[in-house]
Image (cartoon, rainbow, N blue to C red; front, side, top):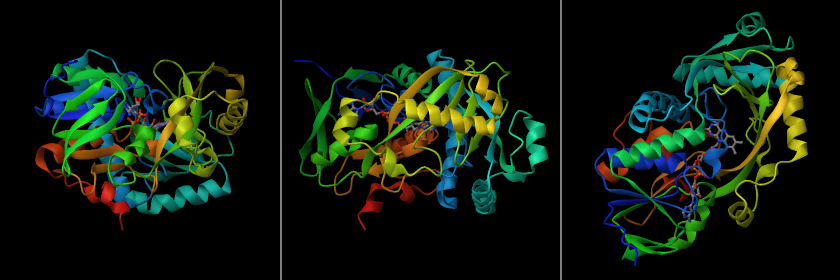
Length: 391
Ligand SMILES: Cc1cc2nc3c(=O)[nH]c(=O)nc-3n(C[C@H](O)[C@H](O)[C@H](O)COP(=O)(O)OP(=O)(O)OC[C@H]3O[C@@H](n4cnc5c(N)ncnc54)[C@H](O)[C@@H]3O)c2cc1C
């Protein structure tokens, strides 16, 4: 019989979201156990670009954009703390971001979004000359761009490791195993069943990424998360690194990482992508969290990136990365108590923004578990509450 101690809270899943929850809860004094079927950052969080720009169309109205802005500040604040506690250098970089318009449709979209984005955050329109004075290698076709003076990129797998290692400094423990169900006393959770036994606890946080819908069998709430496939490329580009994070609605991101790679992508994650083309079967996503890369994605990603930075023609592909994102029904995270149950919390469904929102998700879960409510006033927790899907 394995002895699991007596945790206050068990977190299922050690991606960026689960490890952030572990860190924030452990730092608040809770005894935390993380149950993971594989290793830290073995799911979507190992493939993410780790881009955090709030001018992305993912934050599709002012209230949700406030979460994007808070996610930025929460990450910027916590990364130095994590680096100090864990001894891990994360590869965090803070740079301006440009959301470029290369064609008519992109210009219409970027300008339309700016009208309301500029009421929530610091952003403005740049002319083509201004854009090319910042980065002369951008195509002469550029129509302009929205500027975000400070955005972030951090390798998501390393960030997750830093969260977990820092959580361990506050006593959190990592247990390998597959969660298979929950134990109850009435509607109150009393433990987590897994491949090797049961762990007794008063609180459970389900941070299972794209597999979150599996937990619908454990209570009478359907977790509205589906697996959304994505691919990106890491290029060796014989040109000095970009000093700005670039993205366009149709052509995705182009970001020079501190390790020397230029990341481009991602399929299924660009603003004009039809998501239905990238949704995959739940069983297949569980069996294969990193499906084989496709030559079609590689060709398409390169062709589109060349439209933004023509000298990418001379780049070579270092890696082609595939992953499965947790797509929620409205593309926004699902964070909060499972309706009708006590002690069980969801932290999933982050879709394209799980790294951007990992730090603030950990704060929200900590507040909900420890204080029973969200303490920050900068953004509205009801927007992410699982109960929103009941009406
Ligand atoms: C190509 C690509 C690029 C991306 N780029 C960005 C980006 O630039 N910025 C951004 O913010 N987001 C990006 N994303 C999205 C981001 O990767 C996800 O939103 C984020 O990783 C979700 O984190 P998570 O912790 O919820 O899920 P995961 O990282 O998938 O973690 C879930 C964990 O739960 C474990 N698990 C599941 N079921 C069980 C079980 N029953 N028992 C035990 N363990 C279990 C899994 O093994 C896994 O480790 C990108 C995604 C892709 C695919």
